[in-house]
Amino acid sequence: MTPERRERTPRWTREHASRIERTDETVAPIIYPPREAVAPDVHGWDTWFLRERDGSIASIGGWRVIFSLTAPADLLPGKRHDVAEIRYFYSREGETWHDGGPVFEGETRGSRQWAGSALLDDGEVYVFYTASGRVGEADLTYEQRLAVGFGGTVEADDSGLDIEGPFEHEVLLEPDGERYEREEQYRGMIYTFRDPWFFEDPADGETYLLFEANTPVPEGEGVCEDPVWEEFNGSVGIARSPTGDPTDWELCDPLLEGICVNQELERPHVVVRDGRYYLFISSHDHTFAPGLEGPDGLYGFVADSLRGEYRPLNGSGLVLTNPANAPYQAYSWIAFPHREELLVSGFFNYYDLGGLTLDDVATLSPDEQLAKFGGTLAPTVRIAFDGDRTRITGTLSHGRIPLESEELPALPEERLSHREETRQGYGGY
Ligand code: FRU
View 1 (tube, rainbow, N blue to C red):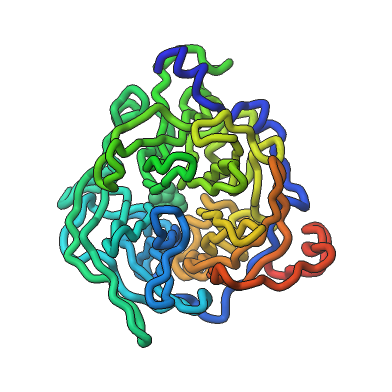
View 2: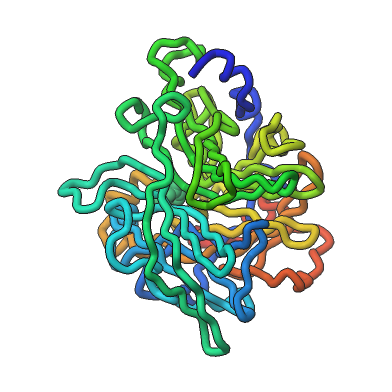
C-alpha cells in the first residue's frame, strides 16, 4: 500500500474508536428465544435478502426471499463455519419463513460457502457468496474468494416459491496482494476476503461489489505507534463492474480502512437516504487492536457520496450492540431502510451465558454448548436516524421483515433505558 493511497482512503481511526461506549441509543433490548425456530433441523446465522438492482427487497408473487448460512442443528455451534451451506426461506407477511432447502445442488466453489448477497435481475437469480477453501480439500483451508452462482430462476404461486437451478458457478475476485491481502501475507488472527455485497449507486447507476478484506501493511512499517497493531488491518473492499454485468468485476481501492483499529470489518453494506451513504459493518470485541475496547456490534459511517469521506456515526461508529449482561446475544447485522426508519436484522447468537466468554463456552459439554446457541433469526431492531446520529427505538418480532407498505406500530413515548430494562429482571441472562 502506498503512503498516498493511505492518505486518500477514509479511515476508522483510533481516536474515533476510543469514543465507543454502550449508551441508551446504541444498546438493543435483551433477546429471549423465539417460540419456534425458523427451521428446527438447522442452525442459521448470517442472513441476506433477495434484492432488486436498486437495493429494494424483491417480491415475487407476493413472496420475499431470504438466504441464510446453515448447518445441521446437532452440530456443535463452533463447528458450523466448516460446513456452512446456503439455504433459502420465503415468506409473504415477512414473519413466518418457510424453508425452501439448499439453494445449490452439486458442486459449488469452495469447500463450504460463507456469507454473501443476492440479486434478482431480469428474472435471473445471482447468489454472491464467499468460496472458502477449495473443493475436495483433505484438510480445511481458510483461503477466501468471492464467487457467484447464477442462472437460477424463481417460480412462485399461492402455495409457495421455488428457486430452481442449474446454477453456474464462477470465482469473481481474488485478492491482488497490494490493495487486498492474500492469505499468505496475513499475520493476524482471522484472515478475511469475503462477504460480497451487490450495490448499485443511485447517483449514477454504477454497479459495485463491497466486501470485507485486510489491507497489507508490511511488517515494521511503523503505521501504528506499536508495530503489533499493524495486524489490525481490516478494510471494506470494493470492486466495480465496468459493464454493469453482475459477473464482471475489477478491484478498486478500499472504501474504508480500520488499520490500527480492528481486524474484521464484516459484511459491509450500504443504505442510501436523502443523498447520504450509510456504510455498515459488524465487528467483534476480540478483533479490536490493543488499547481499544468495543463490543460485538453494528458499526456505521456516513458520507455524501459512495467513496467518502466517511464520518463515524455517533462519533465512534457504534450503532447497535448487545446489553452488557448478554454481550453475545446477536451478531452479523444487516440494516435496511423502512419508510423513515432503519431496521436491522441479525441472528440470535449465544445467550444465557451467565458471564462466560465465548472461549469458556467452547469448554462446555456439547449439550450445554447447543443449549446456549440461538441459531435462528433475532428480533428486528428499529432505529431512528438523522444525519450522523442514530437511536434504537424498539424491536419487532424475531425475523420480522415488514412489507414496504406496512406502517409499523407507533413508538412508545420513550423506550426504557437499557439499564432500566436490565434492572427489571432478565433473570437467567
Ligand atoms: C460473520 C461471518 C462472515 C462469514 C461467516 C462465516 O458472522 O464471520 O463474515 O462469511 O460468518 O460463517
